[in-house]
Image 1 (cartoon, rainbow, N blue to C red):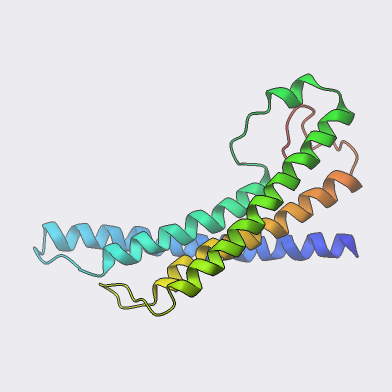
Image 2 (image 1 turned 90 degrees about the vertical axis):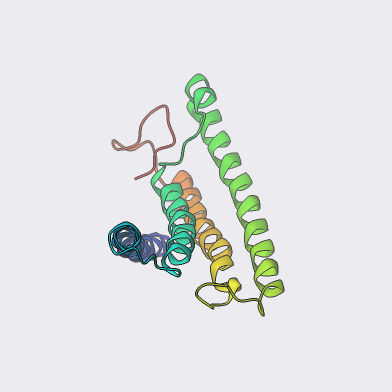
Length: 171
């Protein structure tokens, strides 16, 4: 049961990662075309800058949740290298619990921001501003799911070959 949950969340992460890759590719092409239109065609696109900016917000917030799962977020791990394995595991659990509290707050306040901006639209592309701010609770919720998987792995897996002795890298 637990293993199926971990596999399900990893599958969601895979879909989100592919979505991020597609959006990032579109953002790259749109940025190149925007520069071409501005300097070669002398006719800048009014809407493209907003789409690029808002898409990057989504890419960063969703990507952060996936980086959390993969152990790729920058962290200060000096203390984890200095303590015993038992204390290291306790510290890792504490770190995840602090992450969970922070992410729950982000989901809550992100939803509050979305509801307060529900009737406001962006100027250049005329979409609801709440769609842009939806990246906060969406990325935070995905981060919460990934925190639960990391906690599950901390409690169910012994020091595997692929896990580094000193860090918090989780594959």
